[in-house]
Length: 476
Image 1 (cartoon, rainbow, N blue to C red):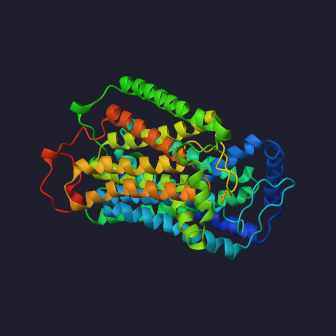
Image 2: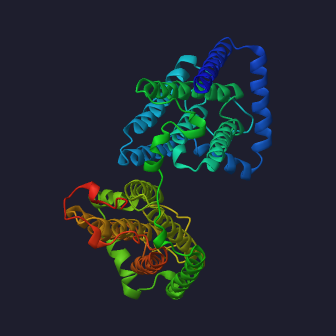
Image 3: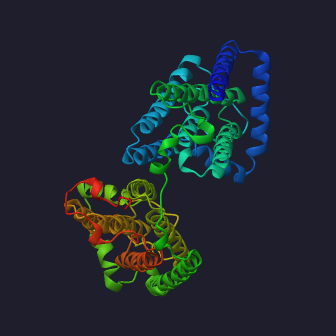
């Protein structure tokens, strides 16, 4: 009875938000003066407070990007991948249905209402299309709430309320950031939130009704998630017998980072000082000039692709997929921690060593324009080596299927393609590539030894080769 009453109260609440959204549409269409006055007053006040501060503009821009299509699309793809691998097909359907619904509602309503965006004295950001409702507010509420409802059962009960508060705060901050950047009115943001609550509520209610018709109990979504029975499938596990001392691992990681950084500085500083960074050690001058003399349109297009597959966005996307698949298929935190430490260490080592060494780019035409970092080492190459090598390290001992050979091949071929592309485009010397190899080898070995990502599996436990995904590390 209590569950039925709470469900009725939730439905009443969703109906109330839908009514609020309807009233806001009417007020916007008729340009209700009191609402217009409040909207414009808040827009002007926030613009005067935020625009003069570069820090606030940057901060609000960063928060706003958490509600962008690119970020949320990746989160939904990763979330759906996790639950699909764990064979929770209905949860995957819920994620896709709710988020796709938001993507349909946002542009169609913007077009139907046709409200122009705010005009402020000191513009600091631009928004595409019309203003009502706020797409960032609508879709962030739908996306983050849907992910919360799906994965809430995986959390321990004491952390669930914390997760709800964090998601609520994040959605509120994203909505506020759109106001602070001057690209939405307050009523746009409230309209996005109210529509988002109504839509996610409708989808969650449909999910609950499906459970009811199957003879299962109706849940309390914000307390236990949509599918409490999926908790064990969604929750990663870690065998007690393979635990490594966290303190020792952290201390060892810091020591390894310092020694790797020292090796890069020892190698890089003499190269940066010799002939102002453009000496001919290991053909450092010959190779870039030879590439510059043999450029063509076809090779230029090929080098653009080769350079892009090693950039930050591509590496981040690949890393997110590897992390999601690892967590879903292996159900261990250790491989994911290994991936995160490897890639975060690479980024910090690259930035720190590039800042200290400060080597000039090759003295040929630079096809990519000015870069914010120096030439040694190549961040593109180091990141490419480590992301594909990490994938190979995680997969190789967990299956005997033929396709495991693909990853070692990619771990060699992809960095070679990126390295040649970067040198072709005049971005790096050969010894910059050598520095990336040193960085990757030292750091990967150290993190592998400290984290032991494959501690839960041994080759003797694997079944005979079958070429199937289920051969991968399943909880034993």
